[in-house]
Image (cartoon, rainbow, N blue to C red):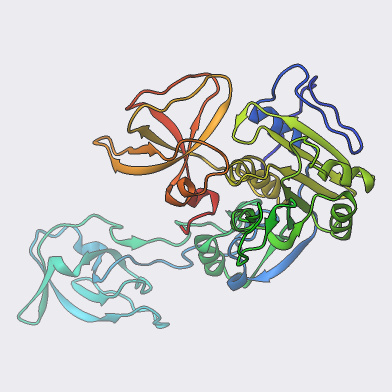
Amino acid sequence: MSTIAPVPPLENCEKRSGNDCREGRGLLSVDEARRLILSSVSPLQECEDVPLREAVGRVAAADIQSSLALPSFDNAAMDGFCIHLDDLGSIPPIGLRLQGEARAGDEQRLMLRRGHTIRITTGAPIPDGVAAIVPHERARMVEGRVEIAARIEAGRNIRRRAEDVVPGATIVEGGARLNACHLAILAAAGKSHVRVRRAPRVGILSTGNELVPPGTLPEGGRIVDTNRFILSSMLRSAGATVEDLGIAADDVDLLAGVLGANRHLDVLVTSGGVAGSVADRVPAAIAALKGETTVLSLALRPGKPIGFGSLGKCKLLNLPGNPMATLVTAFLFLGPLVRALAGQDERRRPGVARTAHEFTHIEGRQEFVPVRIVDTGPDGIPRAEKLGKGGSARLLPLAQADGLAELPASTGAIPAGQLMVFHSFVEMGLLPA
């Protein structure tokens, strides 16, 4: 199970009821902000038993042990012919009389006699007296007898009982996000149900007087809300159940009404209304509900301002409104928050790519830029080109991209051919695996 490192004192932020904190003595790094956000998060305690067929994507509540040995009996690893121990030392070619046949699913156990062989199929129980199995390609029928053309060592092509799993062994670790392979071994171990943690319930709310819903023709300075497509896809990929709370105007009472009516959820995530302008009303709405919020200024591009806090037991995360900034901050903070609530073991590892050309970058902020994979180099590492001219409101580069390149705060421009961290949209839950 993943653990959250202790949070060091952060002099440039202060947690207040309904108030925010600004840059003060500098900008927070992404890692510092993530530790701060996750420091008070613990896994949801509610658990349930679900059928295996419904468990894909759920998080195992605890380690699961097998009560069975896997395999549960010695069986054939391939189609072939059984060899008796006393016949192993014979000089090939070895001629053996065909004694019978053993098939997968047979309950009757045969006894192999010396000088004889039994034809056997993959998965069939090993007859008594069998020391090895010769693949059928290395045997032939000659005048009614089976001729073995080469020597074979004892034990070859036999799957022994418990060589995969011994009784009592852990077959799925607590915190694992269950996939088809987990379910396969659970089924093989005789399980029909699995105990999982309750999936976090997350509400998503877009804020801004300028927003109209998809399908509406924007007029008079309005724009179509696109962030809920990004957030809902990423959240479902992280294992959450999503409630779409729609769009709220920049009005404290209206925002407070929507947030207050949904404080029963595990997380409320808003996009927009957190940058600190006169139109940003999210922190004030949280204050009106006696909730807590902290606004952080990050050494991050895009996505410098984000807010986090709580409304009773409900966690709050307030993201920027521009689509690219929403995507980046959701990936960096919302995904880890949801996985921590779900009790999911955090083992995500980013990929790497090489720059196909020079990537301009100003030292001082960690930056994420949309990139497209153009080819694969002779070393097997993909090469990526940067898309667009920057700007957190641009959508076309995102629509054309395969993922995001991560440019560290400690470096400036990155020359062509250099390695960089690459986060694919598959990893983020924005593209199907």
